[in-house]
Length: 209
Image (tube, rainbow, N blue to C red; front, side, top):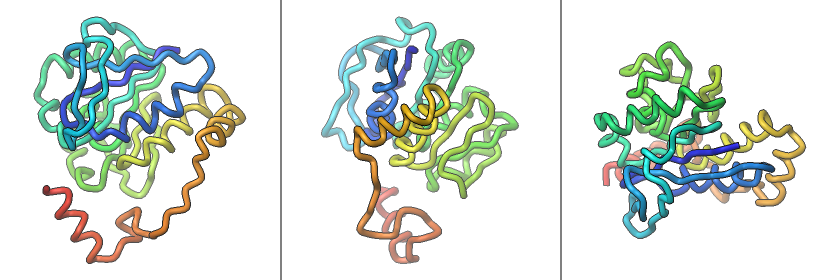
């Protein structure tokens, strides 16, 4: 099973790496990180880079496409070469997926029209621009072969969900145990429904830089 992970400048690291840690452990999985050109691609904090081992024109098919989000998503929404590539790969996939604002990129490629989808709470209201139906109360949304995850850490849940569908629940649970994914956060502020108004205001300030 070939998994293609799209990289672009200012992506959010965990959006890509969280799902990678799960999906890459599916028996028979082959993961390729791809970007406009080969080489390192810097994340949204510029302090870390992931190497794209293949340029977009070197990847012509995938069983699963993963599109991460991040502040750099906005620049990709008008990049014709990237959108064309996403559409071409989507034509070959069994699963087309996104984390965080990556769903906006799927939407801009015309793949989410009439479909339910989610995204990071900070950009959820942009999904209707692309004909999608935003679903802000669900962490993972599966509509046909399209699976979208809410913000950042939700990508791990997305990957485990997909692993269960692809390789079975037992394999998904074995991978969950292997990576010891047993969240017990010290704070209950991981969603808009749980966070206090003061915490929400602070998150907005961080979001705006």
